[in-house]
Each structure stands twice: as structure tokens, then as C-alpha cells.
Image (cartoon, rainbow, N blue to C red; front, side, top):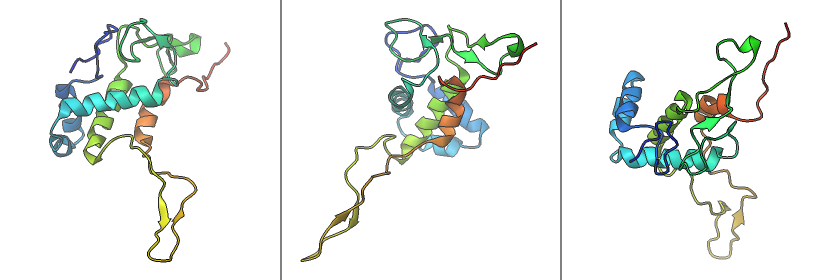
Length: 168
């Protein structure tokens, strides 16, 4: 596993180390759940992959380098709650991965114990045919999970959010 440190690595595949994830879950009284995951490196890599698939086009700012493997680090990501924001926006550092990204990666890694973060979908059966009876399918399939807690962690880093600006 190669962890992105903020350098714009061309080979990085995770936003968190196993050690940092273990500390994170220990502090939140979730160490037992984290310990139940056999391959923690793979869980963190899958979590990072998921973030790239689901958030890539929603992040604020732009990638720092053309060749970097992951979406972070980035330029021009406003920090709405940053110091001195009333005088104008401050920005996340361009040589770091924001703590929100690391936290989201860890949270998603923990959720891999329940199965893939994104599943291939088939049509869901509403009723089943047995003998001369007919099978009926649901119109839409909503079996893909949505991780609202992760969305909330990452929301400050998304493009298109409303920025509060005040005049002096």
C-alpha cells in the first residue's frame, strides 16, 4: 500500500495508513469492528478507490499535478470555516490531504466488512414465478448503499456548495 502524503504521488493508492486508521477507530470505541477486518490494507485501498469513483467530479478545486494517482492533493479548495474567512476565503493547503478525506477513507474501509462498497446490480424480483405464476420486477433498484455519514464528512470539500460572504 502506498499512502498519499500530499506530494501528488503517481503510485499512491490510499489516503490513510493502517496505523492511523487503528488509532482513529480506537479513539471512537470501534477497535473491535476494525480488528475484524482481515486485510486492512485492501480495505483502505478499496475505500480510496470508492472515493475516486463517487466523488471525482464533485471535488472543489483542481488536482495539483497531472500525473498524480489520486484526486488529492488539490489547488483552490476554499475552506469555508478557515481563519479570517470574513475577510475572504482561505484555502486548504496544496501539499496535504485534508483530514476530512482521511477520515472518510477510514470510515469507508470499516464498511468493507459488510461487503463491496459498490455492487453490480441486477433487477430486483418483486415476486417469483413458480409453475404457471408470473415473475414481476421492481421498476428501479435501490440496492446500492449510500454512505450519508461519509457524504457529511466530505461536504466541505465539494464544488458547488454555497459560500457565505459578508460585506464590511
